[in-house]
Image (cartoon, rainbow, N blue to C red):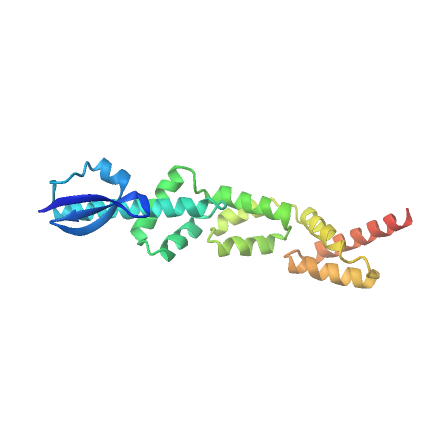
Length: 212
């Protein structure tokens, strides 16, 4: 058994305390966990209790790190797991944190895929092939990708992407317009047929506008 001889607020972080055992610094701990465990000077702790406090603290730190990561935008579960590993947390901690995040609906891969598809549709339209590649890179499973990306209207997305790009092709003749816009759309992940139809449609619209 070891005895708590001091509990001090940590400098620079009011949410953590330093715990001293038998006159020497032993570990730091989240304030909430220290309060929950009713730690106090003079209290004796077995090695098993110290180890358990350390495990709880790592899980809390992992959870806090994940919530901060999610604060920028929604993330897939694989992205969160990768982030925790990068921060040095164990696989066991990552499992525990992800379970808590999923139960709290802070991580939901199906909702993440829908968010990603809608974000692309609004700001940077691209084809299902490219969408699928992006989502696979983010660790989303193939079935979830297939269910959501399959609902995307490829031609409508190609039209939206092509309409934005066509504004930068005002000095092109028909051949240049079709070549450049078609190549752009295929780089965005649209198939040849959709790229060809959309390119022809946008050229016709330009011709109509110029004749008015």
